Image (cartoon, rainbow, N blue to C red; front, top):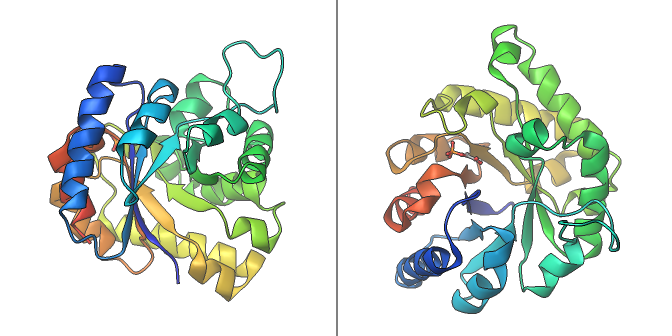
Length: 251
Ligand code: PEP
């Protein structure tokens, strides 16, 4: 059966020293908490990966927030999937709306990043979601379906089974406006139905679909109670250890 996952995305926050303190606080809380089968992930900036991996115990997986779309070579400033793997990290967040919007992350690039992540044994947390105008004009289902199909539907069922999906309506990211529990469930059920049509019931049932967008301790329980919401991708609230734990324990 699919996994329950709560993944933090620190984005471009925390110096190395600050990141070590925060990861230590999260690790201490996680170590003394019954997680009820929830997998905990921390997505840090690249420079934190090695140290955070050394610091955390087995109950926490570490994620990068991006990877290069090339294997290696003359790509100044880029970090490859193999490099991320060599830090001990297990996950990589791909296709976040901030990367799509500010850094030209196209579906074409994502196809290459997904392939390189899988080749290197990293689990992609593949993000997608509509902007406000797309929801207001009722195009949100089509947009979400296209983003998933363009980025992932070339994969074999076996490889697709290694992907974690994260539905993140862009209008809810960092805005304090959360999708309602009903809106989240409606979209997650649509996504699962789309997966059934493409890969069949078993693959669809085994795929974790996370919700992201202003998820906090106060609304996490209501979101996670939905049948098709398998956890969260958490931005702002993952920068405080107690808030992050409040979300992890909302399951
Ligand atoms: C995110 O950026 O993935 C996110 C969900 O951010 P926030 O929780 O701050 O809305």
